Image 1 (tube, rainbow, N blue to C red):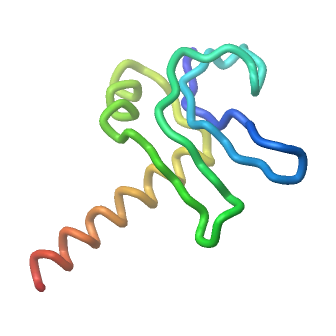
Image 2 (image 1 turned 90 degrees about the horizontal axis):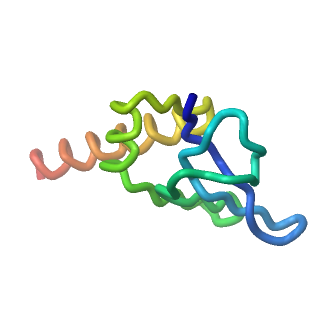
Length: 90
C-alpha cells in the first residue's frame, strides 16, 4: 500500500520534511516513489509547499495520506476556500 507521508531531512535539532509518496513498508527516510512537496516547521508560521494536483492524483490512485499529511491537505484546502471567498467579496 502506498502512503503519502513525511520524510525527515535537515540537520540535527533543525528538522525539515519532504512530503513523499512511499510504500508503507519502507523506512521513514528510505525509498520513495515521488516527492510532492516539503514542510518546514522551523519557520514562523510553518511553511508548507505542496503540489496539490499530484497529491490528488496519488489519492485517486489509492495512496493513503498519514494523519499529519491529511491535516496539511485539509488546512491548505481551507485556506484556498477562504482566499476564494475573500476574492469574491472584495
